[in-house]
Amino acid sequence: MHVALGSVWLLATAVVAVPVKDHPFKAPGKGDLRSPCPLLNSLANHGYLPRNGRNISSEQFYTGLADAVNLERALGDGPIAGAISTSTTGLPDTANLNDMAKHAQIIEHDGSLSRADTYFGDANSFNLSVWRQTKAYFRTPLITIAQAEQARQAAVRNAQRTNPEFSLADGEKTISVLETALYLYMFGNGTNGFANRRWTEILFEEERLPFEEGYARPKTPMNLPDLLVIAGKLNAVNVTAGGIYGRHHLF
Image 1 (spheres, rainbow, N blue to C red):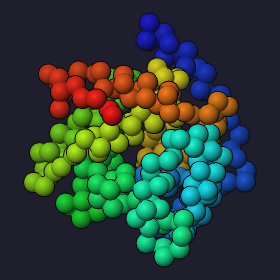
Image 2: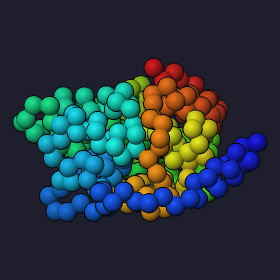
Image 3: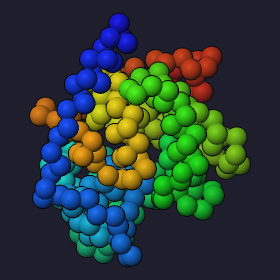
Image 4: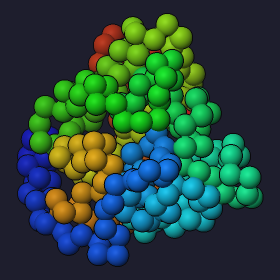
C-alpha cells in the first residue's frame, strides 16, 4: 500500500511549477548572516526574509514563512520567540539569523542532520560530510517516515560516538524530531511521509526552495496538529531496540 501511495505522490509532484518571480534565489554574499536552519536560510536567499539576515522583526519572520511555504504562525512561535529573546541586534523585537545558532538554546543541537556539533567549532554552517551520512538513508525517490527516522537516529548516534561532550536534553530531542517532521511535511504527502528526495536535497544542500523542480507553496496552511501527527509516526519507528533513547514522548 505504501508503494502505491508513494507512486501516486511522485506522479503528482512531477508537475513543474513556475518559480515565484518576485523572489529569485541569490546566494548569500560577504557579510550576510545565516542560521543553522536550511529553511530560514532559504527564505533569506529568496528574499522572503531580509537577504542580509540582519535585524529581522518577528512579523517579518512570520510573514516570510507564510508567504514562502504557507506555515501557520503557531509553528514559528517557539523559534522566533527564542531568537528575539537572545537577540544580539540591540533593537527591540528583532533578531539576526545567526542568533539562532546559540548552542542548545533555540534550534541548534548536537546530532544535526546537516551540521557538525558545536564541540567541533562550527554548528551553524552546512557540513557536507554530516549531510552525506544523513542522505545515505534516503534510498528511494520519496523519503519514507522510516527512512527519515533512521537517518535522524543515525545522526544522533554518530554525534554520540564522536563528540566527547555530546548532549541532547529532552527539549532538544523534541526539536530534532520536529525538524525531520517538517521536511517530510513540506515535501511529502500530507501526514504520510513520502517527501520528494530531490527537493529535500536542494533545501539542505543549496538552501534554496525547489520551485524550478516543481515545488509550489501549498494551498492549505502547514499546521501544528499535522506536524505532530508526523512527529508521532517518527517516534513510533523502532529503528533499534526501542530506538536510541527508547520510546519517548515529544512533550
